[in-house]
Structure formats: structure tokens, C-alpha cells
Image 1 (cartoon, rainbow, N blue to C red):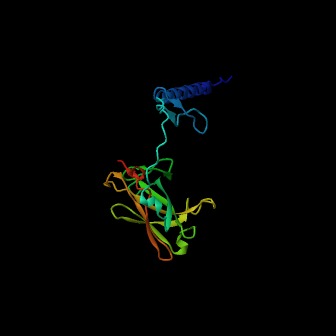
Image 2: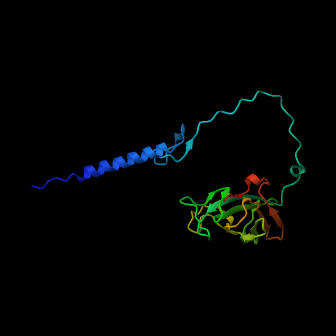
Image 3: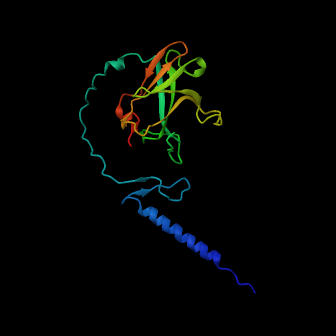
Length: 214
């Protein structure tokens, strides 16, 4: 008579113990008072946590104050072009760095050696149309040191992307290992098919420019 094996109950028991220990470790890694968030599968693995802090003080009601006068910039016309732009963390870079399992996400903070990608649209305010390479337009990203990065008009996600994915201008750059740290004030140069030229910039606030931090 053949004896029945008891290997499976032992394996299951061992696996349950490992999972329980892992869950205890993850829970103990949270700061005191932090609350766990669940992942997409609802397993309770903390992907995001919050820390309780003192609420901001309640300000007493005060009489309304007249707004300050606007700079002359805001009383003049805008144009001839306007721009919407995104700065993306992508990879791999020519220096062998990637951004991990989640790529092509907007970011304002970058490390040396990473790959930056600009995606942007340019609008002709005289007719409300988007500039594209089919109408003879050209665009490039200009870095503070004078480096010019050509931009190409293409579908986001490449040829295999869903048909309703938007088309945008895009340019890429791998940050050199010795590049200066701090905010990077880039601009976009536009040459329209009918011969007009413009230099576009994001809001001139250093905290909104891409930051090279390491």
C-alpha cells in the first residue's frame, strides 16, 4: 500500500508564512500614523501613503484688497503662435539609463544621464490651426547652452499606436553626465510654412522649468 504524500500541505503552509512575513514588513515600513492605499488589485500593498499634519491656520475675514496693476505684457496681443508643451521622462538614454517600469510620464525633475522628451503643439492664432510638417512648418527645441534639438511631427506612441492617438511635435535629448544642475530654461523655435518665425517659451518661472537635480 502506497503512503500518501504530505508535501503539498507543507509547501502551502510555508508559502502562507512567507506572504504573512512580507506583509508585516511592508506595513512596518510606513511612517507612524501613515495610512495605506491599495493597489489596482486591491491587495493592500502600499503604493501611496498619507501622513497626518496640522491643518493650516484659519485666517480671519479681512476687507477686500484692490488687485495690483497688471504688467504691460498682459494688455498686449498674444501671438502670432501659442504653444502647449509636455516634458517627459523616457528611456533608455544614450548613457544607458532608463526610468524603470513606467516610462513616458510627465516630470519636472531629472537626473544627469536620463533621457528627456519634449512633446508640444503649436497653434497659429491667426487661423486657429495647428502647425505641422505637412504645411512646411519646422520646429526645434533650444537649450540654454545654444544646443538645437530638431523636433519631428509624429503620432504619440508610434505607428502601432491606436488610430485616435494625437499627433504632436517631439524632440529628445540625453542629459550629459556633466551638465549643470538647476533649472533649465528651454525655448521652442518655430518656422511656419508661410515664412513666419517665433520663439516660444513656457512661463518664465524657474520653478516650472525642468530641474536637473543630480
